Image 1 (cartoon, rainbow, N blue to C red):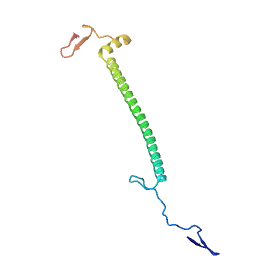
Image 2: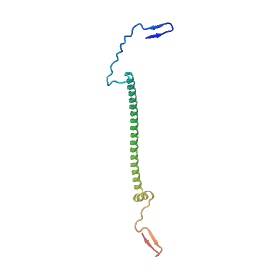
Image 3: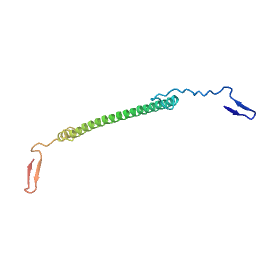
Image 4: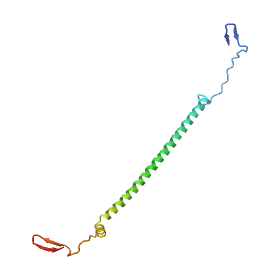
Length: 131
């Protein structure tokens, strides 16, 4: 090999014997691109897998929280429905005719008249009758 310099020519002191460089033989299943490339691909693959795992964990925890809040809302809804049924039963008991008679007797001293206590005047016949 010769290099041309403005001062002089340079010739390599060792003669080129023409022996080819021996390259390692690649096997059939060898990876193309070299180990450095595949290390980077592997590290990128690992980074992607870890990020997907973290996203999956985050989404699973969010889904669990949503399921818990839905179940709590359903439990609260059932409690409210039970309370509504109890209140409707109390209302029906309070508005029953027997309860109204009892409260009127206790608080207002009003009683259902017995037979013969109420006199009714019939205008057509002009007579009195007892209820």
